[in-house]
Length: 47
Image (cartoon, rainbow, N blue to C red; front, side, top):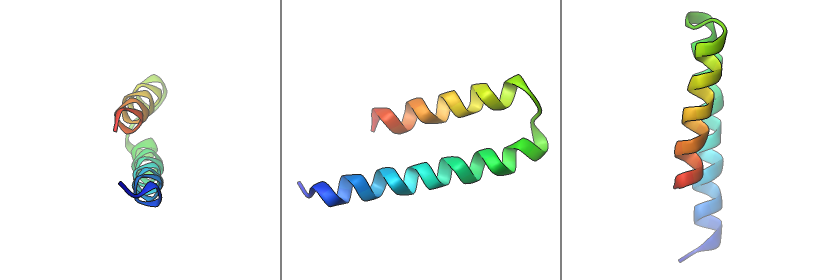
């Protein structure tokens, strides 16, 4: 197991999450965006 690999994949996942949330805020307003961010963060932390 390479430590750098798992860190790199978490960084990529975080960048994807940020991008998704940035795009989503144009389509989703208010509480739904917060819920989406929490769900995405939970999925990333589980990996």
